[in-house]
Amino acid sequence: MEHEKWSSQVDYIMTVLGYSIGVGSMWKFPYMCMRNGGGAFLIPFVVFMIIGTVPCVFLEMVIGQFSQSGAVKVWNLCPPFKGMGIGNVLIGIFFSNYYSALFAWLIYYFYHSFSRNIPWSTCDNPWNTPSCISFINVGDDAPVNSTNVSTTVARTAHALLKSSASSNSTALANGSTPLIAVTSAEEFWTLKVLQISDGLEYLGSMRWPLVGCLAITYTLAFLCLFRGIKIAGKVVYVTVGAPYILITVFLIRGCLLPGSADGIYYYIYPHFEKLLDAKIWIEACNYALYTPGIAFGCLPTMAGHNKLNNNCLRDALVLTTAIALTTMYMGFAFFAIMGHVAYLRGVTVDSFQYSGYNLGFIAYPEAVASLPLPQLWSVLTFLNLLTLGLDSLLPSYEIALTALSDQFPSLSRRRWMNMLLVLVPSFLVGLLYMTQGGMYMLTQVEWYAFFPSIAVFGMLECFVVSWIYGTHRLQRVIKSMCGKTVPRIMTFILKFTCPGLLLIIFCYSLYSYRPPNYGDYIYPTWATGLGWMISFGSILPLPVVFIWTVYKTEGNSVREKLRKSVKPNTHWDLSSTHENSTELMF
Image 1 (cartoon, rainbow, N blue to C red):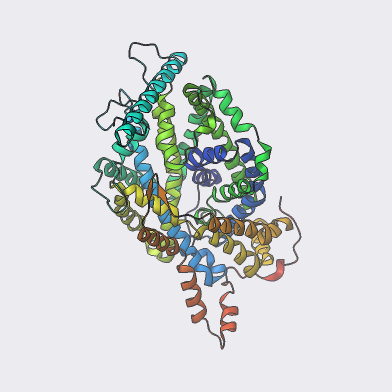
Image 2 (cartoon, rainbow, N blue to C red; image 1 turned 90 degrees about the vertical axis):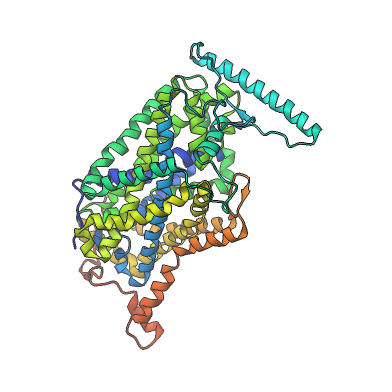
């Protein structure tokens, strides 16, 4: 059955752009910059966006558009590797499942942003402990301005730290355990939002306010996806457009605050000596290749809704350029605000090396609490994160929805049933993350769900299309859609450069692997075993489907069966009349 088509090509570009940027551009990218020398990280990031991301994005767009199908059916170009498509769908399910939990937490913070006094800015709440430190302690009668805040913060922090040190000295003298200072934002996150348990072994009770936020998340996803991509493609005009407006507001406001120049300088000034460290290049390559969701199944799925004569090379260049510029633009806003926070605390910018959830749910709340009118900036911050999260969440559901409708065409006529088959089980699994020990479970799933499957699928994708299907066939496919082939440098990169880069990432991931941890909690051995089961769960369909397909193929020997099985089906086996085409597409 023919797929529903985009109303316009702008809908398609906006959708994949929103999916690619997501919350990661506000969380992971700033952390990668701080961890790797600020501006020095931008240089290899841009390099790998050009030589790695553009070809891989182009490849996924081409095979998705020509197949007019989802992540599984696209592998009719080499049937034994359909298991890789099933793995892509499973990765999409893992991603959407834990991303929904993340979205629920953002809703919870968004709700509390409307409080008269932001609850994570003070230490006088019922959940706070004696070790709590609040960096905001401005009296109600004091005028709120930058100088006043700076003076008060410095005085309050110094007094609290001095008090903490004195208490710790007394505790040590008495043989008791000293207190460790914890910020009010961190205590709000762990003791109020999560009410976190002692470990994965103790899931504890359900956090019902978070369950309500999770229900809102899935209801919102259902409403946005119910009418298909034509409606979802219009939703992204708001969810993708709004972050640009909000980030611009943050950037302007941040630049007007003292200390912002130091933050921006740290961001753009390249410490060239850092470039001598191979780790920076590998991490930049890793981030550049995975930002657009390569090997997640999204790009082929979304491209399957394009018209056959769409120019994929143009779309790949536009998308990659937009991703790079948007990510770097968001970096300016982030470092302007963090420069101001560093100024208030009397520390350097690189002292804020938070990552992941700590950056989103501790560092950002601390930052907005330091600004005048904190409720306003908190609402804008979490509204921005919510729109970015929705941009990544909706396409990840669509991966599974499209794969199911490809396999069972009747579901495409009953989209509501298809959506229930995807959303209801996902919601039920998501309830695990809403328990007191849910954060430990989510950390483990995020740690293992994409390793090493993404790197393996990325390498195999380039290898299968470039070497087994063949670049000569790929050029015919491109010419049949666009009337022109691509420059040979593109096929060369797909055959050699991209697999090599992904192989380096894969090897580095194995070399740098360590068991997961959350804070001071070390996961038990059985949890590590469970994690590896999750990891190989998405890879397992690949060898199973490969062996089954070869076994069912007619032939007198294994070699003959293998040779016949890798042949593309009739849709992908184009006539050789275009084999000698040399016209280039620019």
